[in-house]
Length: 288
Length: 237
Image 1 (cartoon, rainbow over the protein chains, first blue to last red):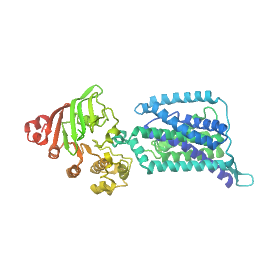
Image 2: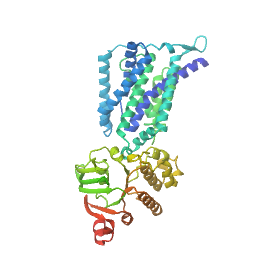
Image 3: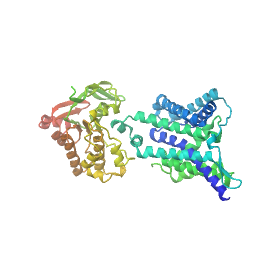
Image 4: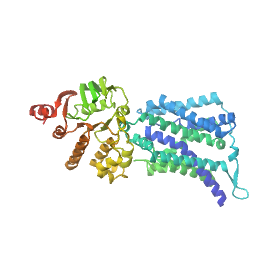
């Protein structure tokens, strides 16, 4: 493997890992703070991709489509939290799994009714439709670099929000003692609504920016969902830092796995998860 | 009327099928210190939680500053100037000492801000030495100081202290009592629940005793402390 080839795999692995992080961070936040297992999280990734496709064919611009779609997904997240998820915080995980599995079916059916069952492609924006030559016959697409850059910015923003702002402190406090947060005059229900909508919007946004690379197809959320649960388990439930570490591990592991031992690539992720579960059942950054 | 910060009338609260409070009346006025006493399981904490909206009464009314807040959200009640230091402290162990304080900062009702981060640290110098420690790394006494300091960060007009000295070494407990005196002297009304009845009655203008979810005594603290027979009957001392 020469250096340029290695570099391409490295960048691909990082880009895939960072994208996973966007989806998984919302899952781990909602799981860690509200105690909700949201099987429908992957559906929001799909909704994001379909919105990006339909709105970009409507407006002729992916950027415009994303700008329109983000507020839509935030509203969708807030509405679902108020109407459905709010009632499940104090319930057993079984109820949450039942409801959110039902939601997957509802989202797939709605997707079929609204957008049909065909596979669609989304065009890379002209501004980013270029490649950086690495050697005579190898080059790297600018769009992938741009995705990685945007993901890194969002990850930094999320870290700042959770670790450095008062809202972040309230969010973390809510994960440890909900009643006490309310007794301090803080509206915990509003905070939960915001966190939930943020998680949904991040997943949908990941689906939007990845649409030109992955194409848009039915059931695209379920693949992502499974990998994201692996990320949450490896990283530690509720840990954003852990989600980042685990996403990069999986992104790089899967990418290099496909190059170095293609026969076992599909297994690598689950082997990693098994090792972590045996070695640290609470996850890399989880609280025991 | 606006002099009364917190007023509960004929509260009946249940936990499932158990009837805990049987028509309890309670009130706290501006600047006043009220002792709430009774043996274990007589309903003291349930009364506090009902008044704070953490538990809903089946009957009766809770008024805060004259306004009916029986069904109001806990945060809305707290925002009307009431701070709660719960039994078992309730610090956030996953936040640092500094974060525990900063996250609670807020102006009081009508915007007064006597208490801020610096004043809390002045009052509790021990916390100042442990600002970046996690809440869980503190000793019991330090955790209690953090909980009281955090409550003060909300600039309350009424501070409710549930078993603030429970499980603390005598020397630390004495320090907490002297802090409570300082807070009382600053004009903040306090409701004190504590097993150290003598200390409560020495501070409280009025005392209320609960026996099996009913008010058995309500009156001047001296009236209770000077009556050996009442003390024995209600509190077993």
